[in-house]
Image (cartoon, rainbow, N blue to C red; front, side, top):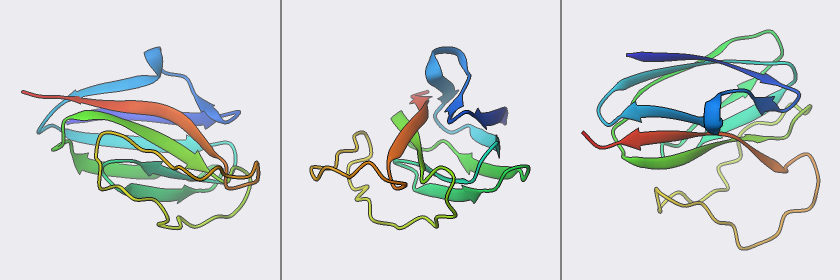
Length: 118
């Protein structure tokens, strides 16, 4: 299992190249902390969680889908539950043709998960 300790500070995560790299089939654990309330979402894997300051959130999953997937934060500073409004049928790309107003629902890409084939 690969374990990553991740801290969201000032609405960003400091990791080399903004990318976590793992092998397909590996177990992955992402332990999250944040300095403010937000909701995070791993596209392609449809894993999401709300984070409160000072409370650890753990994602434990098998990296069974190869590709490059963004982890996005939604609603910094607001108590926001994941809305499920995203379509994840295309596991490698995320696009939303409708522009979003610059409000608390604005998405911020924190990092990328790269899953390399065997």
